[in-house]
Length: 132
Image (cartoon, rainbow, N blue to C red; front, side):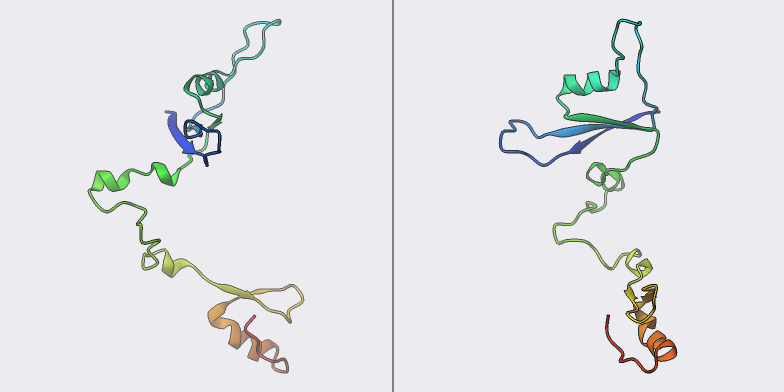
């Protein structure tokens, strides 16, 4: 079933209402042809125009807009975005791998940071070890 979401846009100087885009995901874009002499109608765009949206995005894919995440309210826990900034102690932090480009490999191979010195010593022993 289609989901309706709002994607807020940055405000401009002449905006009396916050601008937004209507996002309809898990739906297939549909247009209605009324006849040969009539233009093709996009009813999602008609709805967006009526509610004051700047545009409409209709896609069969699932789009998760972080600002619309209400799962923390359902669980009764803290809000997803903390005013103190991101939480780097989460399980995601352990899955991020920092890589450095090797300046001496012809294809600029990306080496995991924790293996960079070993890579330099093994493959480029005559070159100075740099922290690229």
